[in-house]
Length: 292
Image (cartoon, rainbow, N blue to C red; front, side, top):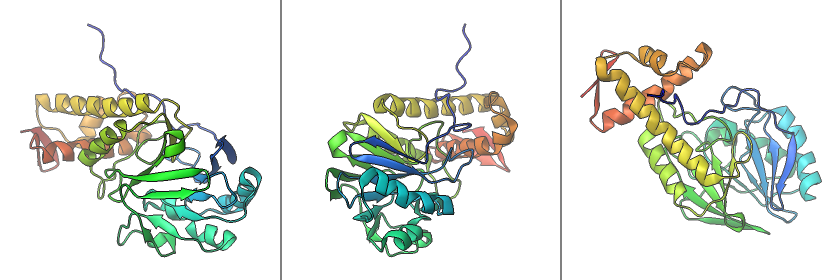
């Protein structure tokens, strides 16, 4: 019998490089957020959307001087623009909303649209105009339709670009590797439901918040779902011989992952165990988990 695969998604953010700015399609360009890290890759992708001289800005990075320096240059070079129509945000994590203040300082105050998350939207430093599932935001050459996709964050919206059958996925789907489900505010069950809803869309291309453009959207979504389903089977299998603490589960499953990434792997395992507990399939007792 051949050995079972350890993972479905095999690429990672490590070592990825992206340009400071780039034109990706006639209606989409990107300026790199310059907040690199193991899970952000080269940084957050901030997207310029539209064909006119007042495009949308989708996500703003974390708010670092290099992005503030590059953004007006990239906007002018790629769109011939020095103003924005609106700023649209996927969710309230600071590496997506922290640059709003810089955008306003550089280009003037414009409306900021997102699904509200009370107590978490303050880093944007601007009033939030509420947007929800099914709402559309249009500028010259581009129509974005909001898709509610909780799981990574409870306020998360993806945006479907009607003219391209493309999807801005924020942190729900990344250009490489898999996304983190935060301990306190994430929900893996909701996240899996979100992935399956995205798979039902007529989508061909993905513009992720981190990493390169994904040209086969359906395959990536299926791989993301299959990867999480495999992880769940691996965790249930690890518990078949008796109760274990999370670090022991990580060592059994993540044999192909360097030790410095084990804390992130532990967070992923916890998200799966919480989902299984919600389904009544596992029980936690003094930091040890067992099958129910």
